[in-house]
Image (cartoon, rainbow over all chains, first blue to last red; front, side, top):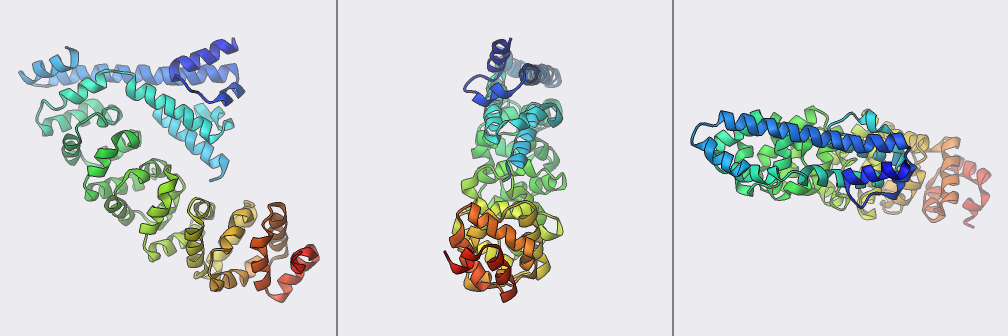
Length: 72
Length: 323
């Protein structure tokens, strides 16, 4: 279980991580991993929305040009 | 900086990066400040480099006219996403865009930005604009955020920020400066009058822990100069320092500074009535003996009035005898 929790933190934060993380409980390690995972998810959703709003807001032909750079 | 306060500041910075409440991450205060900082480094990489769309947005931002891009950035992207993209923008374009944004929005952005990733842009921003943003951050009491920027600003920008921050705020920001090797240079930019103001603020706003901490983070010579300026203040100002050193057990920080003060400064310090309280003298002597600071203590003892020397002699005769 503990290795699994540490792996989850490593999966989110990457390496190197401070060795002292071993002092945290399983629940705390799970929360630490979730805190970054939540932040990434929120950031990705905010980015989706911002790109979508921008493309709808921009007048043609700017929207076409910007869409090609952003989405390909 | 005390490990507890430094650890709490690090947790606050990580919480802000992760857009969560610091209370949620309170358990991280059990780690060392360096450990939390290492976590923040990793989280910064994950959030800034984990989405390839940031690079495409930086490219796309060149297409619309600058005024339109600035409006979109402010109203559709918001401060957090702009902070993630800022470091990827062409410096001239970024400076142009920043000039079109209100200081309140730039302050929002600054709070979210990793200044190391936008160093060229911060250097290129007009000092006047940085002053306006600093004023906004000062109003919001964003001392931790400002402390992250200090090592990444030009002297002109620092001076513009000094102008809009009061003396107590300067002291509070100094506590959170991340680039510690820059602190001596930054303090050197302050006028004598501002340093004196900050020393008075230390007593008025109960900021002596921050002021004493500053002495540990600048070279010994600078610490001596600052202490000499402090010695020029009234007794009640200096009594605040004595009370803090006594309460927070900081004599091991204060004693070595005495070596770098002028003889007049040391004499003034030794003559302070607050220092002659028996429990203060005992704490100073015990601290010196415990931390091998006798060589810092002796010049002070030599300048104490007879009554205070008597207290020291009764508590630790070998100190008076110089053995």
